[in-house]
Amino acid sequence: MIEAELRRNADGIELEHLRDLIHADGRDALCFQFEDLTVDCTRQPVTDDIMNLLLALAEVKALPDFIDAMLAGKPINLSEDRPVLHCRLRSPEYRHGDEYKQLLAFTDRIRADKRIKSVVNLGIGGSDLGPAMVTQGLAGFHDGPAIHYVSNIDPNALLDTLAQCAPQSTLFIITSKTFTTKETMTNAALARCWLEAGGVELHQAMVAVTAYRERAVEWGLDADRVFAFDEGVGGRYSLWSAVGLSVIMAIGSKAFGQFLDGAHAMDSHFETAPLAMNIPVIMGLLRVWHRSYLGHMAYGVMPYDQRLARLPAWAQQLEMESNGKSVSRQGDPLDRPVGLLVWGEAGVNAQHSFFQWFHQSVDIVPIDILVARRPVGLPDDPMWQNSHHVLVINALAQAEALALGVVDAVVPHRQFPGNRPSVLISWETTTPYALGRLLALYEHITIVSGFIWDVNSFDQWGVELGKQMANEIMKGDNLAGVSPSAKAFLRRLKGHMPDAE
Image 1 (cartoon, one colour):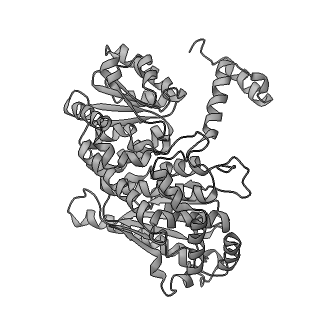
Image 2: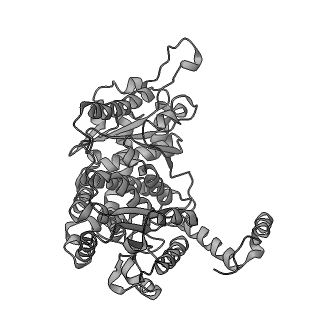
Image 3: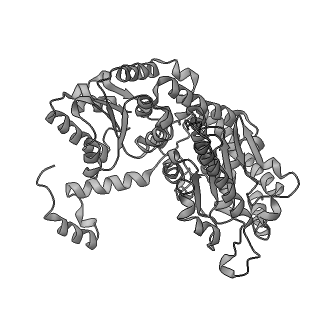
């Protein structure tokens, strides 16, 4: 009944225009505030009736019970029969535990040892995207060694990084949940050879972060240099665990604690706020509205902050790996498309590349526009301060231009239809606390929309398939099943393949 009513409202809202909707009485109810975080949803194609229906849908599907089950540690990851534990990692209780204290003690020792000039994190996917994004995003708070990230199995990625390092002053962090990830372990083996060639012993220059401590020890690492995290922490949600070791190396224990505090604050809001005032719930429901009822398959994430340039890639993995599914949580085929194609770029740069498509294409892509109202660490000189002010005004102007458009131009190619939805997300300044809060918000948005779509947002079997296929081809197993084109490619490659691993 509710879903049928939403479909009827979707037909009706297409006859409305945002330039009219944003002036409707009570529209400011779609502008949400949590601490200094403002989430302005007034430029969304919704009415009060539509929002009430979306909230009713969440109630009917028992979203509050699901949130409680997740935070209570119940096994809501049905396909792997695991709990979802990443929120516990930012709780005050976790930080009183021995595991977290040992992690910080090790980090403090390394940061105090001025011998270590470079830290290289070897990881891929969730073992790279989150830490790399946060390290760059909090560049203004760095007071530790230089931090590098290598994810790609392309040897040039590692080679280019090693060119900036010296064996005697480099620490490698091998970050792999399973400690079997082919790309990461290949790079780890190359790094070990590089250290040995430089006369550096393995136990001095390598540590591991994994859910399988025994595998790291078997590989050759000392047990006290292996930092574990629980299997119930998914890779793309693992930034808050020991996977964040490289971030702590960059900004220190105190700032990392503030980062966790921000995330925990959003967790508390997510757990306790009424659905109608719950920012992750509202934004998750809006994503469902766009995908399932308005037919928008893509979603943009545009941070107006150069240091947050990697945020879109992180958000891309978060949404697409979590909700890019075709079966329900019970394993039944879905009767409609779910999940969003997420992409983006740092603001202003994006304006001069693909915003043209946003403004005048026949397709509509809803976007998030994110900006800090005040900069971090700029000189007091008014010219520098004004530069950031121009950045913020550009963010606001794009939200307005996308929504309102221009329809009275003399020539057709200078007409802009408008009616392009956006959410304008702003906060005071990008501190560790503010960034932790923002990332937790996006995690919860993803989980809410995934639950409403009835998919398991915590597995990623599509990733596993690609790994399996690559391993079979590398070993020469089951080549009878590959395509003729693949066999032809392997024949062309044969003359370039090494004789040994």
